[in-house]
Image 1 (cartoon, rainbow, N blue to C red):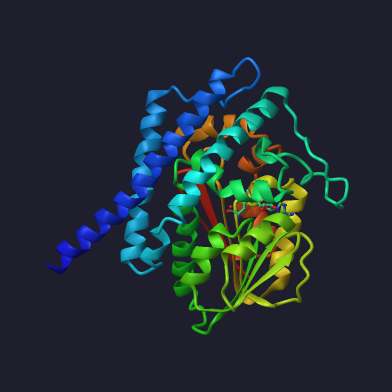
Image 2 (cartoon, rainbow, N blue to C red):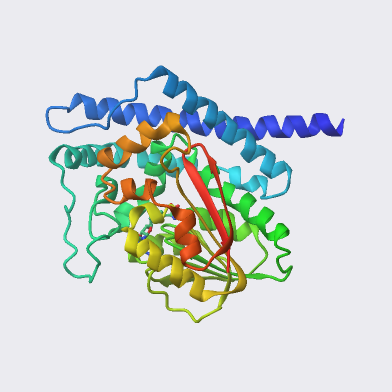
Length: 347
Ligand SMILES: C[S@@+](CC[C@H](N)C(=O)[O-])C[C@H]1O[C@@H](n2cnc3c(N)ncnc32)[C@H](O)[C@@H]1O
């Protein structure tokens, strides 16, 4: 009886995730077709036609949804992570997404990498661009309001389960390293609009949770979404952290490193280690790297061209384990799922 109930719960969790994948895949097709209609003035991303590759991706999507459901059953995080944010907001965003996808495709066609006025802010050159060809880069409230939805459209509704898989790896690592049971002081780098933060701050026993990002509008959006007393919001670059040595038990980032030049990545590693206490954990979730899954190398090759990611290619060949060791981390481990890879190390 108990096992049957467990099976029913797991099936329903997988069904919720799969319905999101279907919805976002349909939205991807819709945006693609609309861009195609205007192909005389815009360029949609390359359409995937390789049947084996599509089948391989589909199998891995189902696998991650199953593992996400199992993680909930195993108590790594709550079933509440599956609750859709707001169906009304979702639908109301569609017209904006359609218009924005045409603007993005236009930038793609013209290869416009810096198509906004950011003259008022003092922004490092590597950051001052239209990543993904997205409107206003990371520098407007409009961009912040569309970002999460656009990412899920791109990843067919798998971005959220890929992000929160890091919770499982972290909790396993914590029990393996006999991590202290007391409430944690956590720092999240490059948190964007707080998408991972929402699931992470509910999944750990938290004394203090700092959500940081250098983008003012993205941080403002995160503030609107997260109202938990232990959470603080700090505008900061990962390579120049305004915190004291040893202030945190855990420092982590999601989808940050592939957007940084190699030297900045290395500085983020050493700054992260500086603000960690001895024995503290550092972790990140980012893109799959070259040859992790040979069948997906082609996807990794096309992505930075279609979505303006100038540092992505170098990220995919970055010897991350050596970089983590070079920064002084120990007990390093990595895992990958679908299109994401997870790195963990200890100070
Ligand atoms: C691809 S987004 C990921 C956002 C979020 N973590 C997520 O999972 O959706 C990259 C984020 O990194 C931030 N970022 C860019 N350069 C950074 C830096 N040097 N240090 C910290 N964050 C940075 C951007 O503002 C953006 O919010």
